Length: 322
Image: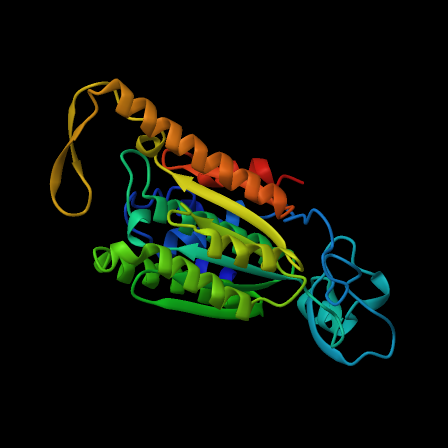
């Protein structure tokens, strides 16, 4: 029995009913997303590295050193069945060998202060955590390695790519604790968001090995030319998936009026009565999104947006449906 099965034993009936908090990240909810992740492939658009396999054969040839056994998956070579484990467990298992190369899935998650915001639905940070956890579970069922880099103004959390249930649970619990700590210190260093984002991309370049698929989950606030240059270097040998998070208020201001809004420093009044200001505000947002989408095109990557009222998992399933 897998670790996730043991952990969730007896909870299957109510896992789908876990609505979760719109402002907090809970590990239990993220673990329950494993039920939503089966049958999906994180299909790369093309192979970027000849050094590392990306859904190529799961076995490279006879004579390789045996590494471990894992449950049989559709498409595995029947010649490499592990009959002893199959007989003992009553379920089909196949052998893995030392020279096999699983693809690494790297999840870069932004927990800077602006991500802890929403006027409806869930915080951008909560949406990003849910999306990242779902991707991690899909990667686990595709037998990929799961690694991550989570960052805020205060700290970076780095997880080297590993395979299996333990890797996903490690990532999820790190997500949960990082979100809690980042929210507690969300007013620290708001002005240096540009520097923090760039530093995180520098760290990401040190972690990622060629042939990986990188998921970037952020609102990409303060992404400058230096940060874009790091993304271009990463894209030379890796698959890039940019998932941009935003709140409807960041896209367009509400109808003319005075609105009380908590920006994290206490309640303030948002004045939307000036039509030119409203038009300029929406134009700026559209320009940022168009620029980000054009950057993604240059990176030969995949661009996806998730708004705070969206069902993030449905959006991802639609984007990556097999």
